[in-house]
Length: 64
Image (tube, rainbow, N blue to C red; front, side, top):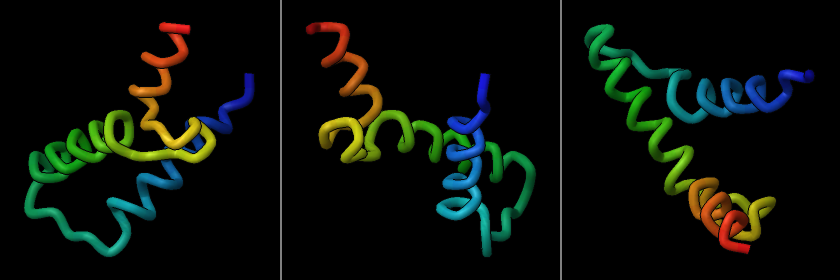
């Protein structure tokens, strides 16, 4: 299997959350990472997913 999906995620994570940021502690980084992952899965709109977030798209796809 190709790991392109994870490479894409980590690339976006680094650009959107990590580069240029300084975290006060490891716990501050972990909290910000959890917040970003929640945003990525539940709020981020993707045109490839018909303008829905990944969570909305999964729910929509399962209902069909």
